[in-house]
Length: 197
Image (cartoon, rainbow, N blue to C red; front, side):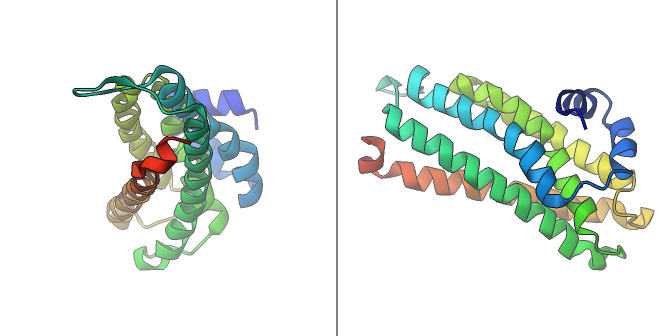
């Protein structure tokens, strides 16, 4: 698997790429380490640049930058929590499978989880300019569509009449996971002592 062509194909022609992915037998850990771990670094590094070097606009305070130590800590925590979320999301897809007439298959569930996060990972570059961070969120919607295409391929061999419900439940799970990551990071960095690090 060529990382760059896989990313391009998932962005430009995801439907065709899911057909190729379905025939692959990449072990879940290899998928996390050789694909997700590389791409998850994009938003983490971009956040380090955005919060530590460029800064965020705060009403009545102007442009505020985190100290470099705090920015680095934020980037590392974001990276770790994001990878854990992607890994957890794969397990959730697999655990939900029987509820939708689908045979559990951790390998395929992990492929759905990891590859559907390609677009949010790549769009994470927008975090380098904090005011453009909302564009990363909008790109995440396209990532949800790519997830739907993976289910519709069908990666998990889900019955056609249950795909939409299965995808909606999985979308809710991934949105909740990302919100939890954001809330945890927000809570950690809301503490004044961490912000002065």
